[in-house]
Amino acid sequence: MKPEFLDVLRAIKDKPYAEALSLPGAFYTDTEWLDIERERLFAQHWICVGREEEINKSGDYITFDLASEPILVIHSHDGVIRALSNVCRHRGTVILKDSGNVKSLLCPYHHWAYDTTGKLVNAPLIEPSSHYDLANCRLPQLACETWQGFLFVSLSSSPPDLHALLAPLDVEIGNYHLEQMQLRYLSDETWPVNWKTLVENFMEGYHLSPLHRNTLHKVNPTSLCQQLAPGTAYFGYKVGFSTRLPEDRIGHPDLSEAEMDTCVMFAIPPGLTVGIGSDYSSFLCIRPEAIDKVRVKIGLIFYGDQWHQKQIDNAIKLFQDTMQEDKEVLEQVQYGMGSRFQVPGPLAPPDMEGTVWDFHQYLARALERAGTE
Ligand code: FES
Ligand SMILES: [Fe+2]
Image (cartoon, rainbow, N blue to C red; front, side, top):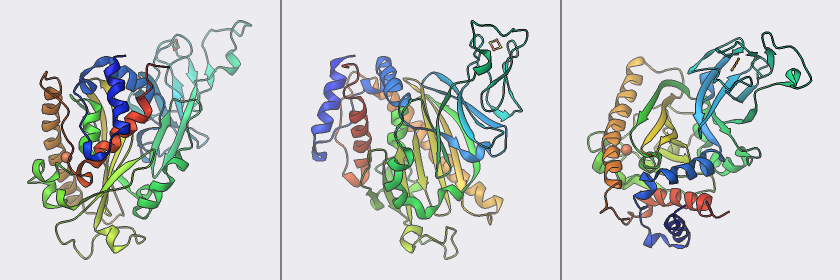
């Protein structure tokens, strides 16, 4: 790996925030660097792949690519949610596509069949023999956890305890009860930008007022942003409301008045960002597809059953309009990052861009030794 990447990351760890700078463009444009991020971040850490609700029923499954690995998560018939390799043990075909509901996992090529726990149950015309242990053949199983209604998967064979890692964040956001919110909008998209720009954009409040002048600024302006103390596995900020909220607004009874009046934005890097409101919340599950291409599962989850479709449609519209503004500017970021004239610039005060620095600190912790071991 090019030594300048390591030099930048090491410098970040030693620098006070007053001297914070953005990352050089090569971090967003160098394909070799993406290979390292894939291996060291996405193939090691806990990655959020969606909501538990997506696989509510027995036999429900979703599929996705994680660090170039075809993976499926299935609600097995024994009630357990499992993450399995989605690669047939016969000759390597990817078994399931997209999402759906199945009685068994049938490989399309030669019809080897696995039960929903991943055990091989039928291999047509293959006789038992001593050179291959058919009886114990099964799809490799990966670490899989749910937290606050989110599904997490890790390719690591010994991942850290996710719930312990996130316990301090639970204290911060527990009263919003994300696990009780229901999915009412889901969109699977590909954006032509580096995955990190999407994390950074969702996680900083500096752009709320200037970029979202006609959308978010009216509700959550930059001036009301406040950085949270970061943990090892998360970082975030809070932002208040500029408008008076309706008296009958929706939210869990555990919420204090102050919490009702506050949104909490947090990231569990590398791949999850969440924007919590008492009434509804948004999330992005982010995975790189190429250095300048990111796959993002975007969702909105709502608290309670008393919503009229019109209110939901309004929330979706505001969210989509805001995301469109983000998308347009991030495409310009991606273009600009490739410029020979692009150099790191200073970050705004911590309440506005401290979370970008938190993200870079996470990258530095995870990657500063990459390529030297
Ligand atoms: S590759 Fe799956 S049955 Fe042959
Ligand atoms: Fe934005």
